[in-house]
Length: 308
Image (tube, rainbow, N blue to C red):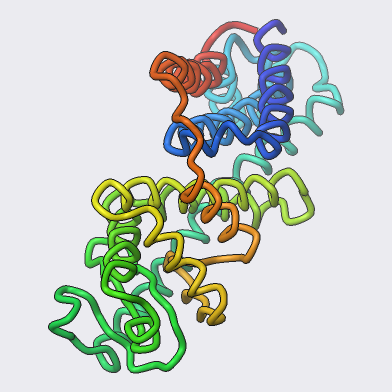
């Protein structure tokens, strides 16, 4: 049962680590690295938690979670449990709980992805009808709307959208900074980073840790796009653009899109970071975090294979 105990411990460590990470501020210094760590914690927590339940439930069938599931399936389809003694009720409960948790995590991820992709398809269809091209911003779709908004619709046919109100509100340099920010979202596929956390929020809507994790990853994604944008634009111009959006009451981005401005607290955190940037984490520390994330992510699948 050593592997089961290790999986349970790993799930607990990931949960505590996620809770601590929601309160950490070193993540703002290197958001790309922090996003990798967040993804590792989320994947490992799901695999370790379900693996601990299934490993305990299926241990009478053989070594390893996958092997136990295989032997259980062969026995079940053969018409019996194949055990010399009655199957204990705690193992039945653990099996049902583990299988249900695994199914829910997979199904909500698929459902969240399907819902998001449908929303993007509908919005692209709407943009084809109501948006226009503008020589001032080539390659960008312009909405004739007085409210200020800027967002991207990711995907294979990604689009960056701004409103007429945003064009009037922002200076040329500020607009270029905002468009660079949205282009970074599209290029780095930040929508795929956010999708698992949105799905986890749907599966566990009562969990404060999951809610805080989703908000923190969303903020880190915005900061990562800010970092890419300021490589070719002035950080202060991007900060003033964010402040203009905030004071003008920016129109929220539609479902499935990534907007330039979000909550007031998140915008102020981004502005402060752009105006008074903290030093980036040392290269050795960043490499160590990435290496730890890779090891963490691979540990749960390996524990699904090793003997109990």
